[in-house]
Image (cartoon, rainbow, N blue to C red; front, top):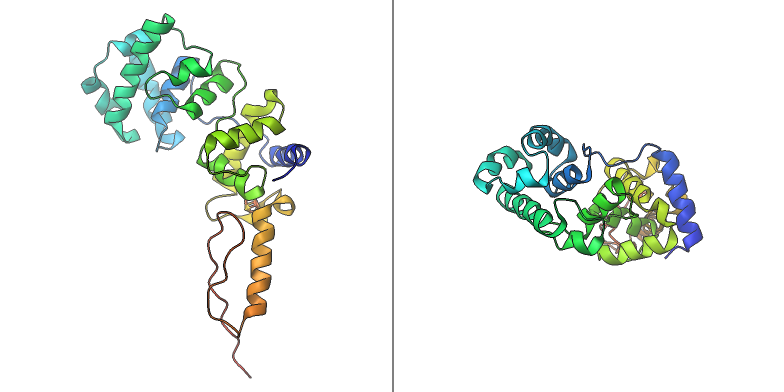
Length: 246
Ligand code: SF4
């Protein structure tokens, strides 16, 4: 795994490539961001942003949302997917915020993750963006990108969060997550656009890919078996076809 200094340098380069990284969810306070983040599970931010303006108007605070029924909520959030589970989570969260925290979204990880429908990633999103508490949300993009580059080394989001947090100053945690998410959405997609990547020279995945290609070329004509990838998350390459003899 990269050293903390290397990690910071890589994040700096990615920051230059994505200078305006921020959450793409629309919100004006911690309550709205919490609702939007719960809705964003298995859904695009764009879709959530289409649904939330009417939702926030009808339920402007936890008290209003706590008074809603799941039957009433479901059709309003249906387009975000998993709407039964999400409506239950929203009503449960609003009730818990009212009962345990006097209607205020609590600024502590432990309190947030005890709310229905709120996991560590969601809590970190709200802490970092709306409550001014350093937080580094690890979603599937952060997980994929950080493992590929080699600035983290685990499939467990909590471990990756700890590894990144230990290398980066707390005040940059949230921006680091936003930057890695944007990089994962735009460049380091499941099928990565390495030729457009600012940290290609630093990336373990890219280096391994080059190594695999070189080895597979050497092996041409001797074996038709697949060349095993050496990088984490790297799909096996198809064997190169032997050139025809002239
Ligand atoms: S070089 Fe490729 S795999 Fe590595 S971070 Fe960039 S896009 Fe992702």
